[in-house]
Length: 182
Image (cartoon, rainbow, N blue to C red):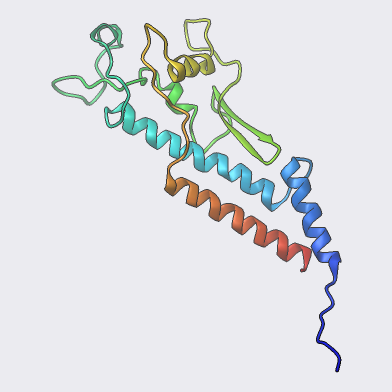
């Protein structure tokens, strides 16, 4: 009696593994690398949503000092009565650099790296009237010091964002499997 057997053609599997390996290393473009880039957009969307909530007082950021409020620009258009102050939101530069819709915003950083993407603040763009870059200001607030409360902007994503990112990479792998004809 002859035992049942199966023959596996490795060509398609080898193509898949080579494509995955090269895209993870960042030396080749494709569905996985595109998925990592989409991760950047998804993360910035999460970070901007979180920033908006925390800036409005809905998180654990320390409220603005009265001296900071007094130094702020004039009243916001459309606000009547008592003025509301957004935490870390005077000029909108830190918030804007998290824009998910564009990679051309001053202070924004997105870089391909092996096995993923780096997202945050970076670049040479300076805050108006000062020597610090937008990235420097983000770091000051991210870390805090004796005179500046710590207000983390770049944090681990929430579970909803992680699930979205997982779905992106699963779809990317399925695309690569289809292309490799396994």
